[in-house]
Amino acid sequence: MTNYAFITGATAGFGKACADIFAKNGWNLIITGRRQDRLETIKDQIKADYNIKVISLCFDVREEQEVIRAVESLSVDITSNLTLLVNNAGLAVGKGSIDSGLSDDWNRMIDTNVKGLLYVTKAVVPFLKANDNSQIINIASIAGKEVYPGGNVYCASKHAVDALSKAMRIDLVQYGIKVTNIAPGAAETEFSIVRFKGDETMADSVYEGYTPLYAEDIAETIFFAATRPPHVTLNDITIMPTSQASATVLHKK
Ligand code: NDP
Ligand code: 8X3
Image (cartoon, rainbow, N blue to C red; front, side):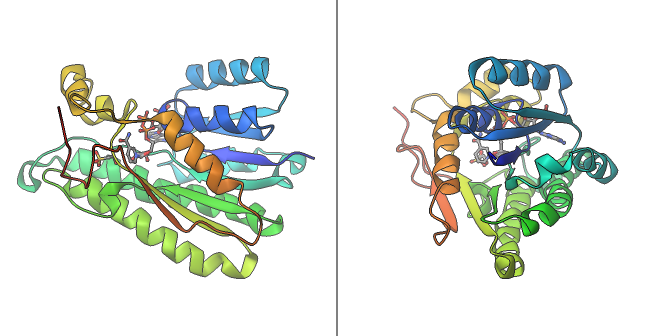
């Protein structure tokens, strides 16, 4: 029986590229996100391209009851083969000084990046515990290692992810569950369009003058981390564009 990977935020960016690479390599998938139309299109495309099973679950990670209902809808033949959770769904909303921050933006980031990750993890962990060679991969960020001007609450939320990866590793080691934290630098996805609330000029300017990471770079890294031998865990991976030395130092042409 082929294993299932549960990937949150698979309607765009890293999650979508991740679904593609796992499917290409024969994994079955549970893909999630809020945009039902995109989920269905991606599911149909992957099923047409690869001979695997794909389940789509449409829910908002911020709503614990939705998360629980969605996970409970999975049948035993799926959950008994569910060995990988990729906690990828997340976002930044706004960028600016703390004193001009909007509480709605702060709530969206904390509720999605921290509480949503916790809700999904709690719902899925019982299956990971029951199955051999299980793993959680948390998508953190360079913003979880450093802080930068205007990044305040997003950075705090990703520092929380970094801390939760360490904490989960301690709590789950007794069950043989690997926990991998992946911290990317600047990657061109829909991330900046969301951060700048649809302002494409602002979003494009983030990636001007250098070559950023692309979603496929992160998907390959996730896949590599998920396919190490059972006795090997990659705890923490920081992956940057070659032109980016730190959260704040970018060599632009
Ligand atoms: P995208 O905006 O391209 O994709 C984000 C994904 O998260 C979408 O599939 C979106 O789906 C999903 N998502 C967002 N909010 C929710 C929610 N409340 N409930 C369910 N799903 C949600 O961004 P990226 O692919 O770049 O980002 C993926 C992760 O990587 C995020 O955690 C981000 O913080 C992190 N990251 C990104 C970096 C970058 O530079 N791009 C660098 C470092 C880390 P939908 O809207 O359909 O719900
Ligand atoms: C996304 C990368 O540098 O915009 O997490 O925070 S950054």
